[in-house]
Image (cartoon, rainbow, N blue to C red; front, top):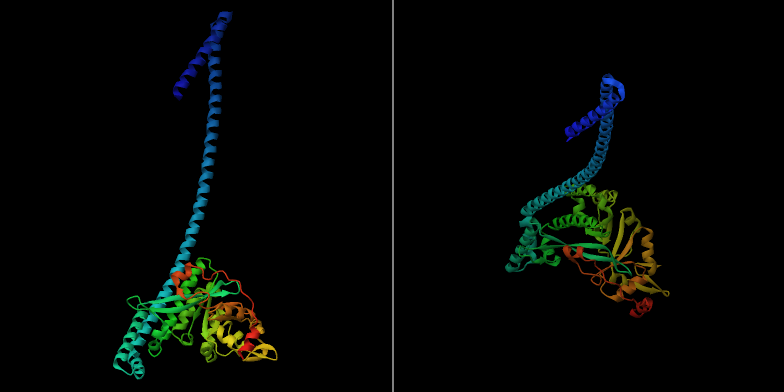
Amino acid sequence: MRRLTLALLCGAYLCLSLIVALSLWRNGGGWGAGVAALVGGLGLCFAFHGLIERALETGAIKSEIEAVREAHKILLEQVERLDARVSEVVETVADDVHRAEALSDEVHMLETLVGRMQHRLDDHGETAAVALSPRMGHNSDHRQAGALMDTVREALTDNRVDLYLQPIVALPQRKTVFYESFSRLRDDTGHVLMPAEYLSVAEPGGMITAIDNLLLFRCVQIVRRLAKQDRRVGIFCNVSMASLADDSFFPQFLELLAANRDLAGALIFEVGQAAFDARGSVEARNMGKLADLGFRFSLDKVTDLDLDLQDLARADVKFVKIGAQLLLDQLTEIDGRLVLRAMPDLAAEDFAALTRRYGVEVIAEKVESERQVVDILELDITYGQGHLFGEPRAIKNAVLDEAGAPPPVLVRSDLQRRVAARG
């Protein structure tokens, strides 16, 4: 097409030059003037054609440059998006690697724990059987105890330890703010063993520490899952003093918690009052190491309300669980005011305020009736736990459903009058 256009233009230039030359020749210019006009006309025409062609080529080049610039701009945007996406993928892979490493460490510790537990059970199985035999007066009872011990041992070695959660609610709204964790064992048929069933053989068999340790790992797992779902609740997890004093297990567990210290605000370790009061220097030092990572402690199984609040504050104990009925049974009237028998110089309604001054919150546990809720609120206690607010449920249900129903209307009662009438 370009060649045809050039041929047509050349023909047009030649015709134009011939017309000019003929016009000069006919007007008396002669052959010389005609030939000169022809040659000059052709030269001018081709020069003008060259200018036009250059102008067109320059315009085409500019258009191509603009197109290249636009394509480069689009390519640059795509590269920037790809770079951002690659950065996200790298961060995701890094997070996955970190989680995989944490999970690998956790699995390694579990394997170590189970291996140590199996070795311990093999070494002390006969000792445990001897310890159980005086309690079993009949051979059939002894065989049942041995079978139960084997079931417990198999449940531990096969990792059939389930986590159950019970809600702890804020009063009076009854909004779930914490969960307490409980362990349940399953036999090979799926039957769930309650603590009352397996503790009688687990304690003399040296398996309580193993159960506690597996429960600790379950708590770390569920706290991690709740954090991923942005569920801002805490988990109370029982820990035995034997675990805190175990020089083989505790360093590994401390390393795991150090790698997950972002969970410190959501994991509270719970110890019994008697065990806490009897703790030694090793247990106290290891509790301090956990506290340095930001983890808190709770005191349960409370039987003595005359608490050493300064000692609790030094040990980073932030919660104290007291049975609702135990607390109400401690109420008595002296000189026309309600006090606690263990602290007769302090008004009963000031007990919770006193513990708060030391950074300790009181949780009323084993709440079974609405009447108890009313009395607890009169004592200025703002946390409750018990079957009234929700029973312990398997983790797959407890995580999916938010525990706690809308609070009913509570009628304030005259607690002091009822305590006086009780005598």
